[in-house]
Amino acid sequence: MSIVKPNQVSITVDRETRTKDGAGGYTTSSTPITGSPFVGRKIRRDFKGQPNNLQHATPGDMLVTEDVLVFPANSDIRIGDICTVGNVTYKVQYVRNYRRSVQADVKAVS
Image (tube, rainbow, N blue to C red; front, side, top):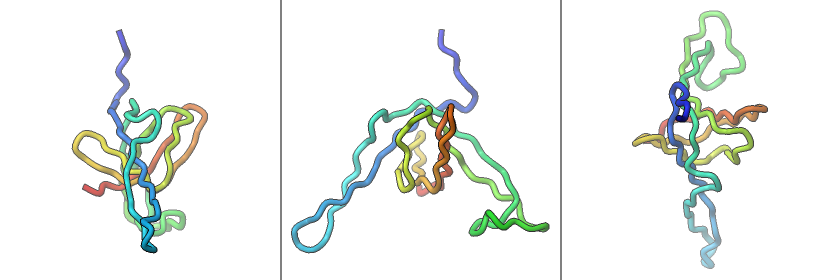
């Protein structure tokens, strides 16, 4: 019997890579990263601040809610990675590495 954690989800992670096309430009391709899909969690985090300047919150700032995806420790998650949970696609905005997990602040793109 396996234990299911609250908000447990399957997270598919793709990374875009650019290669030269030989004509002075680039072509972009998307490939799954090693370990994908991950068994992780999706949580919502509330904090006071401004959506564009979160580090300088002042009294009277609005309450901002963002989605956070939690991955197993040592997962290779980077800013700009594309994560899919169910039918929603997210782009990684910020990554925090902790001893027991990797947390990525994400923004829905579809």
